[in-house]
Every structure is written in structure tokens, then in C-alpha cells.
Length: 246
Image (cartoon, rainbow, N blue to C red; front, top):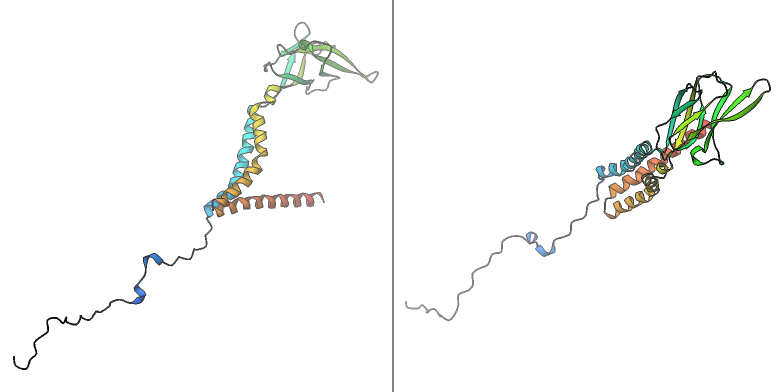
């Protein structure tokens, strides 16, 4: 077309206008997130009450364990019998006790008043078979003095006591004996239980340290509160005793 200059193919057309969308505030780099402010830990009430009542539960368990252990491993046996005289004038009674039990003492405990009393004494001059002798103490009203005589013995081999009173008119005697078993008294379980009680304070201190080290603050506070309650109750008891004695 006349008057029109031909286009120059070597010149590139101007670039199209670039439009940016979005705002600067919406741009967030995933590698530079701001750290969240840590919130203050809340009290874990389950842990707190566990620490508050656990020491008392352990103490109650140990007390009950001692109670049942003393029942199961009681080294003492107390026997009471009413012995009647036989045709030969002797009082004889056999006791069903362990062969390892030793006699501690014996005495007559009748519900009636009598002018004599019985006791068992250890005789160092006799052999073990007849080491325990039965003695009778009689009060003489005319002289006002006591007289005693060996009237029998306790045989450890068959757990039998026998004696013959000087007063032949008495037909029955109420007698009591106490036995002791040293083998049961030194039982391993009892000794171990008594020793373990000495370690309870150290176990308590270790539990408090463990609770705070494991970030169980509520449990540790509960354990310390248990000690505070114990000291408060102990102080209240002392105050009560002081006012009671005033």
C-alpha cells in the first residue's frame, strides 16, 4: 500500500504487560515460620492426687503386711488349761506345741482364792530334759511366811507338765504357760520386712526426684504435699497432747 512502510522482521514486538496477583502479606516462607510461644503447663490433677495419696497407701500396705506377718509368724504361744488330778494324785497335762518351742514361764491362774501359787523355774543343775521345775509356794497363816517346794517338772521332749501338790484335797488347777519359738522369731521374712521399712524414706525422696526429672511436676507436687499433710497432722497431734496435759 502506497505510503506505508514495510514492517522490519528483525525487530521483536514489545512484551506483554505482566500483572502480579496477591499481596505481600500472604507470602510466607515455609522455612521461616515463627516459633509459637509455649503455654504454661496446667496442673495434672490425676498425677497430683496420685502423689498425694500414694505414700499413705504404701504406709497402710506395710502396716497390714506387718499385721498379717505377725499373725503368721508369731513366735509366742499362750496355753491355758484346767488340769484335774489323776488317781495317783498327780496333775499331768501335755501341750500340742512345736518341738522347737521353749517354755518361758508358767503359773496357776484359777478364778478362786488359794493359799498357794505355782511357777516354773529353770534349774541349771539338771539336764535339758528336766531343766524346768515346777515349784509350789504356800503361805503359812500361823507364821506369816511363805514356804516353797519343788513338786514337779516340765519335760521339753514331749511338752508335758506334771506336778503333785502338797495339799491332796485340791482336785483341779487352772494353769497357764507361755512358749517361745526362737526359730520363728529370727525368721528371714520378718527380718527382711523390718529392714525394708528403713529404706522407705529414701524411696520417697527418690520418687520426688524422679517425678521432677521426668517433667511430671504435678506428681512431684503431690508427693511433697503428702509430706506437708503428714507434718501438719503431726503438729496438730503434738499441740493436742500439750493442751491435754496442761
